[in-house]
Length: 459
Image 1 (cartoon, rainbow, N blue to C red):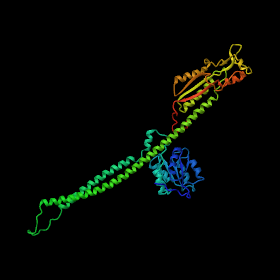
Image 2 (image 1 turned 180 degrees about the vertical axis):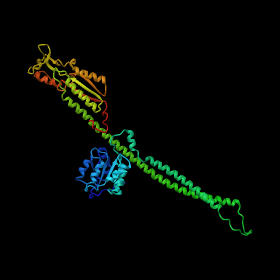
Image 3 (image 1 turned 60 degrees about the vertical axis):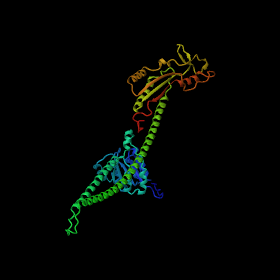
Image 4 (image 1 turned 90 degrees about the horizontal axis):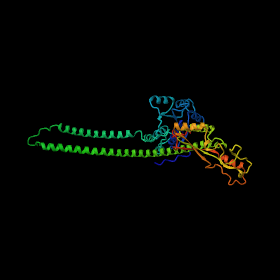
């Protein structure tokens, strides 16, 4: 059915949704927007009361269980103010029972809906409050949006959520209706035959007539008449049965058409849920990748170590152990890799025979050697505390694994001068110092950590 255009001169009705669940607010808003309603949302009862201080909606949908002020307290506060007391409030909750419904109505709520609100229930409510007309609700019901779960379910839960609540009841009703109709038809036939036989055998005996004008009916004539009556009765019953079965067939056709419409609506709902889940997962993946990239970038800001120092020192152990604890807290599973690089310095031997950076003002082409400073050799890679920490990690195992790679001068973070000619030792060694570094890289086992599906709060 084509939905009639809304008169632009008439202001749209306004609905206020109060729910601490962003997913629940989004789902109910999508249903109400199909009725050309202006939808406002509040994440708590306190925000709803603040909104009502400057605006007046036509209807309020109030969740029951919320942090801080709950739904009952909010309804009581709204009904106690003359400016907002006449606004209809519909409670919705996962609780059940007459006690809860009685409490809600006693506080002033017009009714209670289940937490998993169906579009048809919203349609009936809006009509009862005269917020929408009948012709606009036809199109809105047919285009009811997909249900968005508050927390993202697995495949089995999605299938249960998509199964209509009244599907089994509908099949059971159809079977009972057909059985009742068959039993009723058989009863009608039996009663009609019994009534006909009673009338035949209870017929009065005709008055005596003179023997000369009286004809004695034979048994054959009686049986023929009886069979003719039975045939006429069964023919009438057959015609009546045909009419009833044709009416039943028409009802079945309408029922099958309704079922087919419901299946199409369910398929559209399932497609909407899949699209929403794909979008949410892509958003979480982007957040997770940004988190890992930011974490690695922050640690790599202190990647450089001084010539002659131990790359994996006690100070770096403190940074790395803190990083490992943080990754475990967010459910990370994978590898933390430390790539140790050494710079090629312009060196001269001192009086003890140890290699040290040449004086800054001396020409670079006068260096005795280009290489790593004593203390940056592979044998001096890590402190005793760092070595013990690595051994404990290997022994304990776990989802976060630490790997150290000694890459020497394999890759440069800063480019060395193309030639030693005209370059001082100080200029050369500043480049070498930038290449003297410990670079952190993260290699997750999965694209998302455990426990973050449906929420990015852990990041």
